[in-house]
Length: 184
Image (cartoon, rainbow, N blue to C red):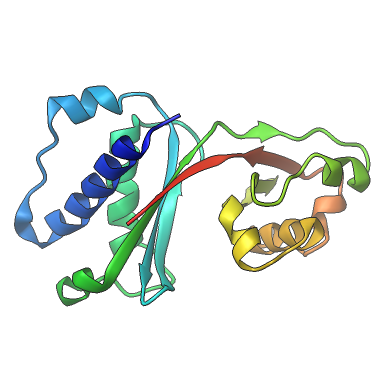
């Protein structure tokens, strides 16, 4: 678990990563590299006037946390295909949220009811996978949209490009994870 002070450092790092795109440079101290060297999944979400402005991240712990935050912040600002890249003029209006993820764990189930019993709204994020299709929703999404478990699963399926009820199929893999959230 990270503390609030560490969360502030990660938020500062994410902001610096975005600013570096506009020529400010990005120097990462050895202290930051050491403190956040553990490989963890992370998502960076950008908001402008409380509206989503970009969200990209890594569900698996493939990079040291500091590197995952830098790459996710830059990708959320400049590489989210749903939005045009963030402009330098917008930076003052952008708020950053970082979600640090636990390693996703597959939920084993034989019937839909068994799956539903293993999900906790507000605590668990979901990943649904079928063949090459994969969708992920962070835990806070279900809370923001006031979804129940079935709606959360259906919307994760839609995010994967699957039919909303695909979560009921036994050949679909469902994973859950938890996050620690830090906001500006």
